[in-house]
Image (tube, rainbow, N blue to C red; front, top):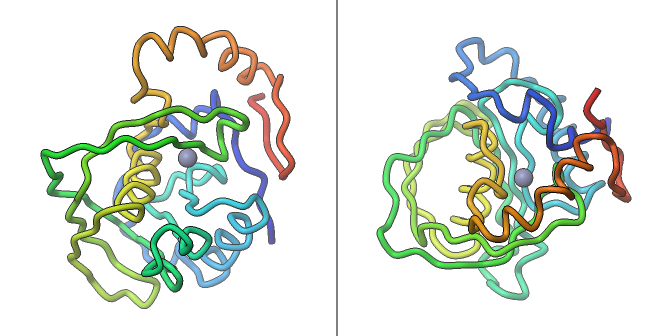
Length: 184
Ligand code: ZN
């Protein structure tokens, strides 16, 4: 099932998610639906708050980025109760977009490397270091679990320039070629 993507301005995108205590809430169907929703909107990552669910959960499939980084060809993961606990001092910049902020792409600086603990869909615990494109995707999705969106991280000048566009978006003025749910 393809869920509609919640658009910025939706309160659920500003909630900080807690660890999921009841793992039965993360059903195989929910994970499959999150991937299906992500593919339907051509995303490389999707966090549960983006489909209106206050759950500490996101999915990533970076295969479409394999041209840039061949190692990403089979990078498909589910991150349950993730916690980033180490960030590199070195930061790198890249242009980001977000399914919840259609049509907007901006430069964002982020730590180049992170360490993260999480559980996968089988309930296995992991503690891994990521860098490059994957570290960026993970940090972007992780932000959603912390109630943040990437426009929080752009320069004050760019933010000021975007303000009216973002305000219009929260009032339903935007276009997207995938299923969305505007702010009520
Ligand atoms: Zn996003």
